[in-house]
Image 1 (cartoon, rainbow, N blue to C red):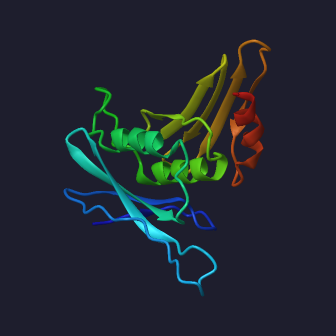
Image 2: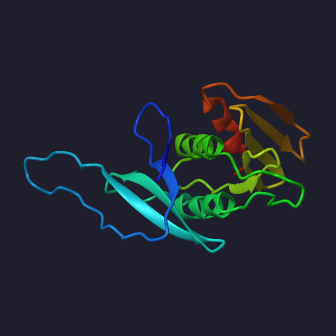
Length: 181
């Protein structure tokens, strides 16, 4: 079974996803021997049911608490991963695996532990969009199947609006996330 890898240069919290019919749950492990001065990262697997299938995500567990957004984000991605061909009734293909993995990597990179979870939305071109709508402000990041990534920000009160392509660094989007409150 093929498993897609996130290509973030440093260790990422969420590293892969795949589809499984069955999964054994693993316990967390921290090496507490005195000679060990740091936690040992362990690969963990989370299994979620979605549309009659089981979707598996793997992540690096460093022994600390998981971010607040972790489970809601994985549930959102499991739901779109399980979409069949023609999910929109207009011929749309399944959501692109690379687009999903890029979105997971960006969420891991951008969101602080207590950040609000984004909604995860499929796009008709087999891409995925993550979006936040809070306090009359919107931030949307779209990951196309061809590697294209674009963002849109709108503040309904101030009428401030920004959009455009996103390059290899997503750090410039952090201030937009902070404005969401």
